[in-house]
Image 1 (cartoon, rainbow, N blue to C red):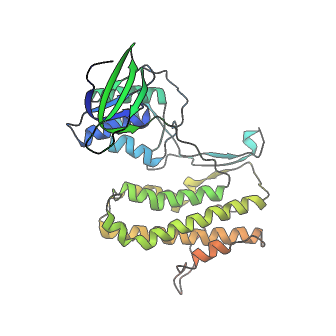
Image 2: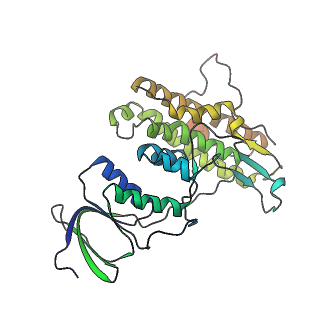
Image 3: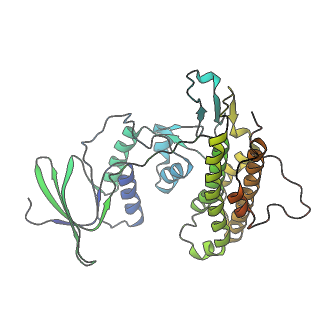
Length: 335
């Protein structure tokens, strides 16, 4: 063991996608910060690592290519994709005879199919280029967390046949893996995208995550959307339990839904405070309208289906203004 532990601002345990992107963003934000990333594997890692995270969504793609400035690599070394594609098979193996939902062309905001091996090798090289101390083949043996804010954390690791000790003001655990959620209903896919693109992604793409004053003005709308989404997820589970799970051999092309494609494109708009508030109010209204259409379709097919919880949340706000005609349907036509 070295006699004196080296002192660093940040030590990140885990030199995969999460750890290295954090290291890059820290160096990008604070040029003089001293960051160390410890990675258990030896680099370079094999290509086609088949790890969680190969398929990015729009927020992740925006973070990689725009926030971190990795656009040239993403466009040159990774594959752009059409977005999520779902196949509802119910045990069928003939893929041409199942229900398919996805886009037939690229939508405006990109997402990528990522080779994690290629990407993580690049991230390690880029991190080192930007001043991050990247240590591969490092196994953490011991961690002593500081007892107060003035004392550093202690990390001991084995690397290259020798032991090392590091002191850090900040210690980050980036060793874990994220889970993947399964989707079952085409209606659920449309709903989840509408909530994701219309509310959550708007806050992120418009860089309002830390604008507490502005988000406070939208507190009523955001809480309503949250309650509505919670009620909808329970309703969709109940609907799924009683549905016949039909799977016709068709492509449900969500790029062909004009409102849906426009919702995706709208993520690239640059909005001032007034326009952003209006955008979130419109998104709230869109969710209410979609919830009403989902509830109507489900209860027409299954009159006994209990939609009381969803109706209660809907009742908090008027879905249609008096005298206004309903909009065009938002869902795919029933199969």
